[in-house]
Image 1 (cartoon, rainbow, N blue to C red):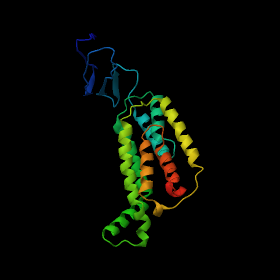
Image 2: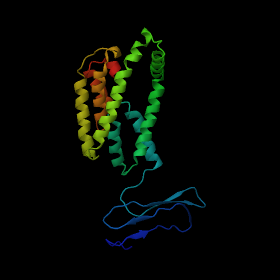
Image 3: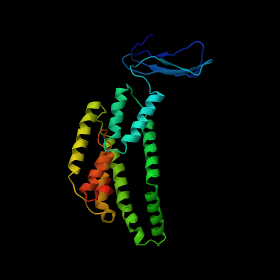
Image 4: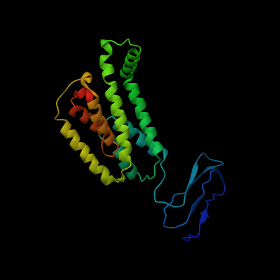
Length: 245
């Protein structure tokens, strides 16, 4: 295989006796570049898949590994332990690299779906109260549900803004960085455990929404627990512990 610096070459895998399922062709100009080339082919007589690896020291994600990461995400997302940080550590231990962002997005969509199922009555109550308010038929029973809407919208907006800004800060995703930020999360949780109770949702104004939104946006960093820092921000802004969580 010739890999001259200026001369571009092409390499293509060939697997005799196997029916091509997906052919991949990669051009490269410098042998110092580490590239991954996988060509998947199904056997004509078996249901097995033959994976050919040309370059690279790490393997692609397998179905079992995806299941393990998914199970961990499902458990860790509801605990203040930074599921994203632990997922990065697990990926490194499994020797995975360049995992598509879509994979993480699907994991979080599954988490969102489970949250909507668990809190379906509360979400439905808020939606019904909003509909009554729009129709000018809301009453005292809707006051608590309606009180959470403005700060929630403010917090969601600020979370998106801060998250986008933080995402532009390239701090890498090394296990050492994640470990350091996990210690920061631990310190935040210890400090918030000393905070007492406060008011309910009715006393939650847009100022508290700003505090919670800023805190949740910082949770974009792998190793900073989004749920942990959000609960801590809610407690620091005066929410009751059961409502901040």
